[in-house]
Length: 312
Image (cartoon, rainbow, N blue to C red):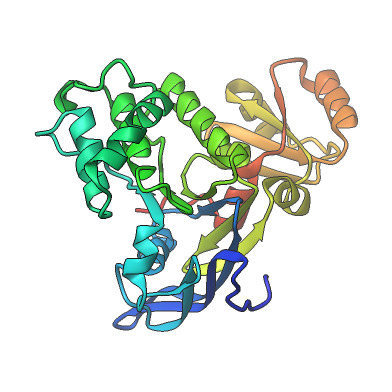
């Protein structure tokens, strides 16, 4: 568990003892987090873990029951307005104005930050190119695909040239091509030194993008580190999946093979081990082929720490 933190001018976000209660229900429970400037930070957790409430607290959309919040040097919620001037937000659900074209959406959003139209217009070509929409500048919102809408929402969040970009499940519902495009844009922002705060249910996304990730559950911090170190700390390095008939054969025989841990998940048996070669040799000799080998990943960590039960 991370030690308590102190707000610092070097941190983009600093949360100390952050708590939010609704009646007798504690949704965020003494959360300590620090996000450094220039890093991509992932906030991960199952449904109902407290991610959305934590974001709302950080963005001054709901008052805390206890604790301290500093975002870009501003004490929240007292200095929420000043923080918003320097923050870009990509919400979970697109909220583009359907009555405006792509260009009009960007110009109108810029006006919310007090920017002169000429200043936003001077950045239009850059923003449209970033989103891959430079040839669709006059298109109506209703005619855009889901991927185009998401790219426009990302470009819109950059209108005020923010110091912090908050992305709430930025690629949910997108096809692989659109998701890869968004990832490439976020990688570019990272390379330019942009501070990113990302929530996602795609562990591959967090593993690819995040310098560090925090896993929270029941409103508490469970673990926080780089994806690589989280995997090294919590999971055996090698995973072998037995599916269908092979999984059923394993259950019937229950062989004594060199596994450190196994999990029975529906039609699949997962074998976790430190010694990949020995286990694979034993499986080949006992069952033949048909198994799937893969390195351990962040999803394995997530499921080990938060469980496999469905959350509604």
